[in-house]
Image (tube, rainbow, N blue to C red; front, side):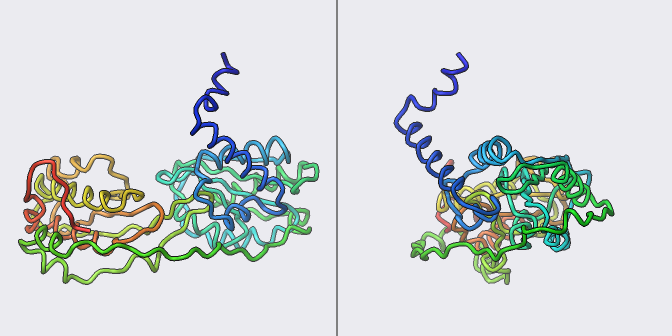
Length: 334
């Protein structure tokens, strides 16, 4: 029964083809020399999803190369990753890979010695799982690798630990990494008439509000196809963020996702992710002047500034502009 369950994915054409592609990609990566985080970062392959990255870690690092590892559920949020990367860059005696279970984007990996890769984790959240692997890229590992993994975890946890000379002296220096350049795809323009109709009541004022452009500060994930923007604040202008505001936000987000089917919108309040927007108006807890945050994740992120303008209008007294039209209809805002 166990064998049948393991082979069940091969019973369909799509499952079989997916398995073949994964095997080919794994063999390609296994045949490459260097840090696994660097290899995945430079590939920037859309098929290297979070679940497939996990399989690579187990098969290549543990089963094939025998890397040692240490793990922790972080006791505090970690924000200054650049300082950690500068410290790890001095560890020439061992190869390191960090794997972080991002609460929205799933499993991400990086070479923690490279600032760009480690910074792609964003902010490491409290209680999320972090694993550090240490080895010699093919040579037999030793207790020194386990020591390196343990010290790395302690540094992520904020401990003041000094790495011994045996970890700092060696051939595993930092290499320059860069993602492959991709040809820009033309973006279709949304019909102007549809936009004007959807925001006919007070929409012009909201559209004129200055906002930051998200594309310039987009955060790229390491170890997966997704990107994620920073969190953007929307200040509540209504006396309370009530049911009408909630319904407006639902309409706006539904319209955004209808246009950008490959993107996800995440909502946050007081630092916590909100899974049900309805909870924001219960007991009138979100009042005038407080901020609700959002972020967008996926590939080819666009229209974030426009989304921010509409959400700002939806959090104001002008929310009714988004409640027009037939029930269960999707507005054409984007």
